[in-house]
Image 1: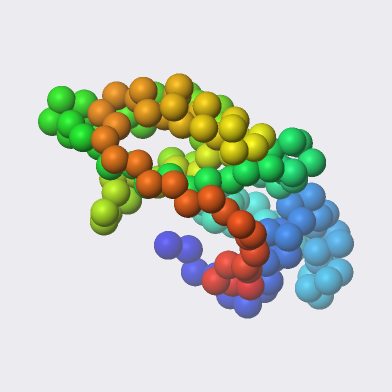
Image 2 (image 1 turned 60 degrees about the vertical axis):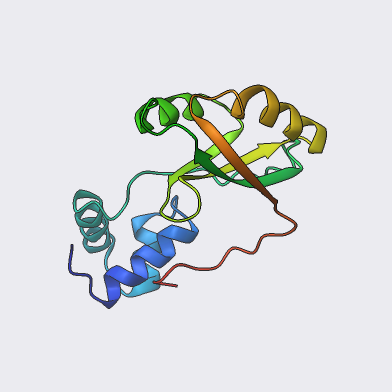
Length: 152
């Protein structure tokens, strides 16, 4: 784990809000020169603090009005490997996140769909036909509030 000082944490917070912010602008904001700020950003990247750049999509604007969290319990763990399930579920475009979890279910999936009939189609034709799927529990997202992370 990399040691972060207050300036590093401030850089991480600022870049988590706007990954396109320039080293010059961030340096001015934090009282650093552009080269010093750039070197810190590079050190954070090289240290693995940033895993990549992401685009924050507005799913509603793209026509995806329904988000569902699915708990999936595999029925036949012995016959179907976890890797087989993970590979198959990851190939479904509507499945945004696949999390292997401990508890009542084996996996937690975040699934997007245009509407409830579209979600039902994805569930019946794609998810329920995956290797080893047993019990499934769905939780439809009514609203979502993004909270800042531990550095926020």
